[in-house]
Image (cartoon, rainbow, N blue to C red; front, side, top):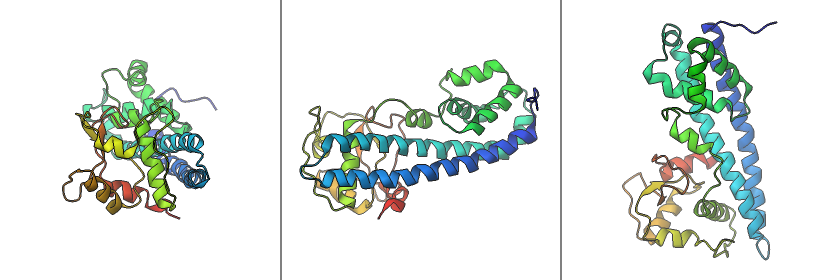
Length: 261
């Protein structure tokens, strides 16, 4: 059966809803893999001596998978939004300004994520608003892509600081004594990073915080202050997230609660 050459609102809405389901399935698989990765990292850290390099490599993979999951959740939200506004999409000659970021992000992400239905959605948007609109989204012309999604799906490796944070959280979760004091490239670890005075611009990074209280105590012991309900782990903006958005300790703890043994 040949592919349709015309935009179809029913087809688009159906595929947007299907994308939400596919993303949930995709994230469930990633979450199951994450639990396995955490156990493997804990085992490596518990060995005598600790297999530091292998643990760091696996931690980087874990961070990457977690970033993908978070990006997918944002994309799923965009799909829900566009499904609800399908009438506006259908009757707009040009993409409505308040939907450009959501539409463009889905188009861009379709080439990055292995979720075929996103490519089918991209086709509908191309049929609706043209090849030029599609290419502008693919190339992020005008910086219209959701910055958080772009950062989470970036090919850039995570910072040494963030890798160490993951290792320390995993070690705490599995009652493993951390004896690693420096990374392989000589970077200072968690404590040194918190005590550094040269990070003028701070944002909050996403780490697997199993116990918000423990992190709050850690921050307080290093002279960090936090407002009620919003304790933060600060690093230079270029360290990981890079989009100026914040993740509270409570958000992090809730997100990783299902990873406890």
